[in-house]
Amino acid sequence: MEQLSLRYGYTQEYLEGLLSSVCGKTVSLKLTDNSSRMVSVSADDYAASVRVHRIFLEAEADVIRELALFVKKRNVKTPLINRFISQKSVELRGLSRRTGALNTFGRHHDLARAYESVNAEYFGGGIDAAITWGRAGRGRVVRRRTLGSYSFSSNTIRVNPVLDSRDVPEYYIRFIVYHEMLHACVGMDESGARRSIHPRRFREMERLFKDYQRAVDWERARGV
Ligand SMILES: [Zn+2]
Image (cartoon, rainbow, N blue to C red; front, side):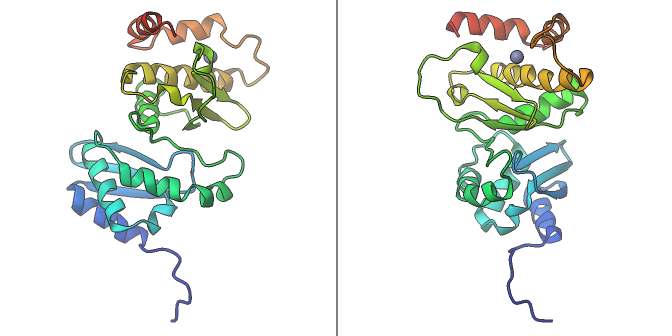
């Protein structure tokens, strides 16, 4: 049969096999239309569950190799993936008008990774929100309350890009992400009008974060 236009470079099976052999783990690959989390990985030493946006079927081989390395080691820089995602962002914006093109890979911090691990550790993987770096603001002074936000209408967490700095510790990023995920969680529980943005129960739950005191101390020392 003749294929007139070959839209994608790989099939899912081929990509799954490629990732498995390059990263040396049994990879189970799921393609998504989720432009809020373009790449998400959970892995142990032997197996990895990988979810990527289907646009990755069009990626160049070196982007896929970098993806495999990321699946294998996690703690690696991903310049090719970042560039690929930003190149595709116009196309993706068309695919996801409601939330716009979201980006989770920062220069220093990977929001998707923070989100996935906080979700697993504190919410049993039960939160299903989108997450992205927000747009850079013009002002230099940033208040605590604008470091992160959660929109109920679009179910999207936004983190202020001023935090995408090597001066900002990973646990603080995770704290901000945890805080915004709590909004998603509490919102789901009450499923009605929220009387207070941070009710007492919210503050109690916030303190359950493992590095709560460390995060608050760091914030104070930085005068955030
Ligand atoms: Zn809040």
